[in-house]
Image (cartoon, one colour):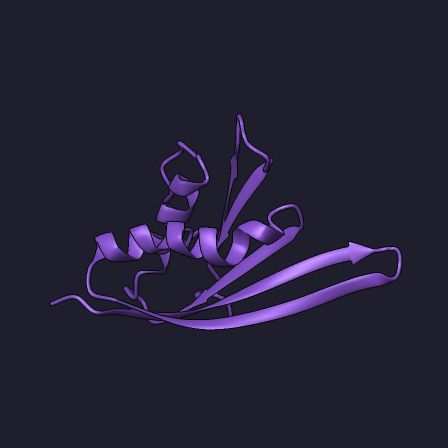
Length: 116
């Protein structure tokens, strides 16, 4: 049986004439299959992120190797309309994807596992 367990840290960075505001939402996520992890990204977007989508967004995932973080990112990218194949950037640290027809311009996938 698969059990994927990781935490995501959702940072909302908003800027105004009075300065910047940072909000932090910490959530724990548990899934029993890769499909559930993949599909949960849509639920996460609709219920926690969409209302802040016009601002700069940083979603940080924390978990052990094989916990399902990249599967979640793949689901999120798919839900946002990104057609590129999303691969784990473990060995290259970062990957940049560009949207063609979206309210977003770029999608960055970073993996800091190899950094000390």
